[in-house]
Image (tube, rainbow, N blue to C red):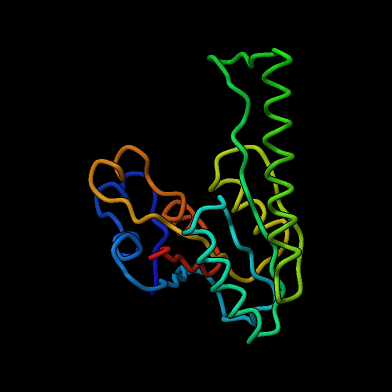
Length: 183
C-alpha cells in the first residue's frame, strides 16, 4: 500500500491509514512511499531484529523472498545507549561493562542468525540508539532495496505510550518497508 510519510502536525491530525493497517493486519503489509521513485530489483534486503518472535517471522519471510529473488540479507539491531541523566552520561565502569556485554551478546546473536541464513548473507549493522534511527541509518549506509521488520501490533494505551518502531520506520523510510506480525 502507498504511504505519504507524513510526520509532525499533519501526521498527528490526519494519522496514517498505512500505520493503522500495519497494526491490525493479520498478513504482511508492504508499504511504499509516494516519492519512492521507480521500482527496482530486490537485490539487498535489510531485516531489523530485536530477537523477538515478531522479528523472526520477518526474517523467515525475507529469507523466502531473498531465495526467490536471488537477494542477500543484512541484519540490523539497535542496542540501548548508556544510562544518562540530563546531558551527562554516567561514566561508571559498571555501566560501560554492561553496555559492552549487551553489545557483545547482540553481536553473537546476529552472527548466529547470519550463519543460519539459507541465502547470501550481507552485513551486520549493530549500533547504539533508537531502533528506528539505527534501522534507517543502516538501510541508507548499506544501500538496501527493502526493509523487513516485525511488529507486535499494539493498540490502545500500549500503542500510545510505547509507539511502534515499525510505524516510525515506515513513516520515514524512502524505500519499501514490509511489516509482519508473529501470529
